[in-house]
Length: 226
Image (cartoon, rainbow, N blue to C red; front, side, top):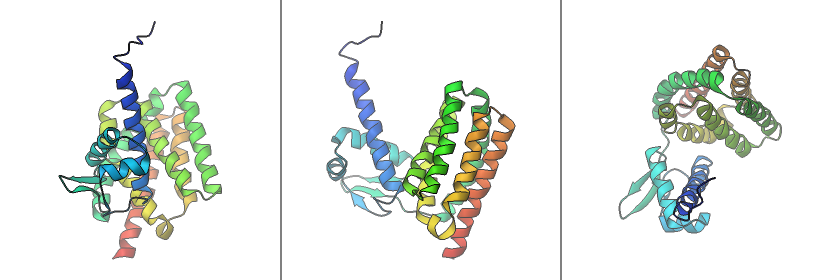
């Protein structure tokens, strides 16, 4: 019988609120509702997102580790700037880890997880058909999380958590100038379907194609800005 003691309930609730606050803040930063350089306070964010100060503070600490915000003692929180050269350095590391995680996820995913990958592929294609960039970004985040969950490697999860938000925000800022939704959805959906099929080699190849696309997109923004 599950332990339903009162002493354990508050911790589960607090963790849930912190995760929800993190998701809300991360999406606001990635979609530029909180743009680079904006300075905010915990109190402002708590009011804006309708969370308590504690979940907001814990979410901000996580976002600071992921380099999406900088916490300035006694001055507030500043949303981190976007740097294309930093993004390229990030991709050097991300390419190698993504390939390993994709291969492992294809090998270890259970039946329910494989079905979920198929659903994510379809959802991305539907988001593109509606030209719904926010829905696509949410599905991209869900795909990232699903791959890490299927791979079941806590070290890869901790490492990738430092990269995904930065990459998604960079894409959101620049995609209208340098890309279209359809090609992005195509390479993401191909990765999801390779994992769903349980094919480690194809999943690794699909991961490389996805990283090729993201790197080309990133370098295109550098050419435009230069």
